[in-house]
Length: 250
Ligand code: 1GP
Image 1 (cartoon, rainbow, N blue to C red):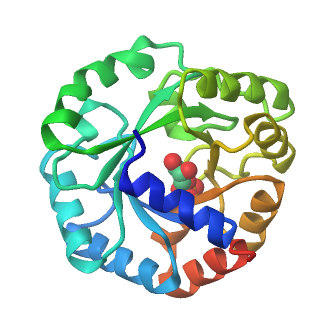
Image 2: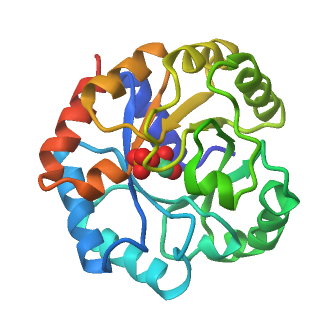
């Protein structure tokens, strides 16, 4: 069943052409600072806040970060967990992901099984997502023991994306890794989107400018995620305005 957050993201994509998500890693700043970042991102036109990270994004710091963000913005807060410990009860939804090209069953299904009862207990909206790591992959590829997809092999990305779709995952996330020196190649995005049809295609990792984001949206990305660029920016509102503004084509 499609819940309100997923519905809202679909609606933004339908009406504006694409959506922008700001990723905040609870391990990178204090909860209060995270709240300010989210507020600045909201002013710049971001559509939702994702909260998660590969390391140190669990427990009290996670919960406090979500709480601080929710105090500052009226946007959906979506968990982006690296393991079952990346869940908490005060967010609105969770990207319930399987890292399809992991070699380790922990990231394919075991953390999901450990986390599922918590998702139910917390009443979190679960948004099923195929998570696919593309070279270079960064920390998340190392942690997730992924067989990263070579940048010049879009057909492999297509095969994984289709597998996710046929398993019922309504969103597919092509990830180059946080802080990647190059984002997912637009040619790969184009092939994957063509195969996916109406499923939402999320692209993230190494996106730092409106120009890059626009190129990816023109290739077929529906949701653009930026984390590091926002984290490092001295003027988050302007940066998000530039990126979100350049992907909203209609
Ligand atoms: C990481 O794709 C996201 O999961 C964001 O990447 O930090 O490079 O923006 P960046």
